[in-house]
Image 1 (cartoon, rainbow, N blue to C red):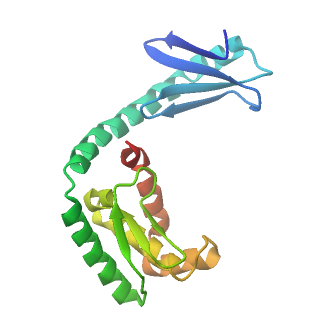
Image 2: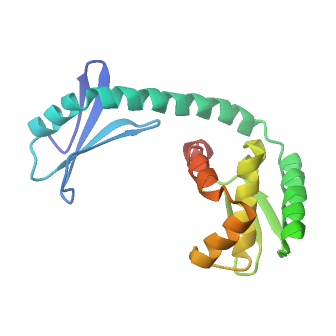
Image 3: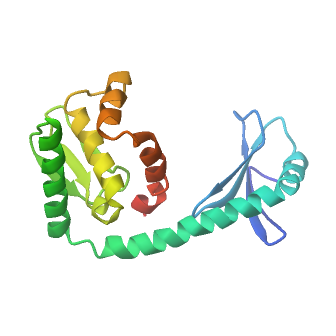
Length: 189
């Protein structure tokens, strides 16, 4: 096998990739990319293949979860394709102002864009940029991102003080952060 090889194992397409800095054989099931197996330089492809066969049940379960994410992506993209930028801007502005007022925050300007990798950001000048796709997420996730960016108007880094301030406003922030990660593939498409 060369550095990149694809093999079918029981109707599962598996991509093997040799990686000279890896120490262990690893399996990842990634939405829209499938099953990826990293093979360290010190391991043989036979060892990697044996490992995949041994982990076949885990891979099948992970593929089921991945397909659910991909299905959600299709539904989400249908919603994103229909996002009216003017309505998204108005909705996000209203909610940003409500949350800022209720918690004593101020910001300079709001920008609403269709971003590929970020849900939001806050500049050193306290300009807040929000992803228009937030307008089609569940309200609790939209609010979490808004609070996150408003706290950045006061605390620039993700230090302990930052997270304590976020948690004071959104006590379930850790759970919402994990939930938001579930949508990371959705915003990038």
